[in-house]
Length: 62
Image (tube, rainbow, N blue to C red; front, side, top):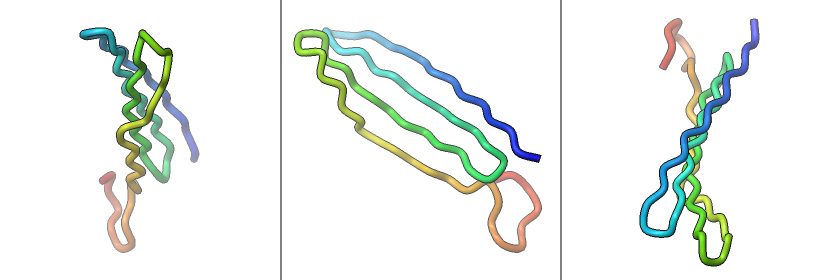
């Protein structure tokens, strides 16, 4: 069974917008943190993490 969940969370402070994106599938969790500068509109990823939900020999999540 494969499923997909996506969620965004926006936080604004001092002229910058911080976006946290989380995507969950059966085999991995993807987390991305983006910073958008309001004065230029430039969007820059500051952290991307791809985590497997299952490791070999382990039957649980994470």
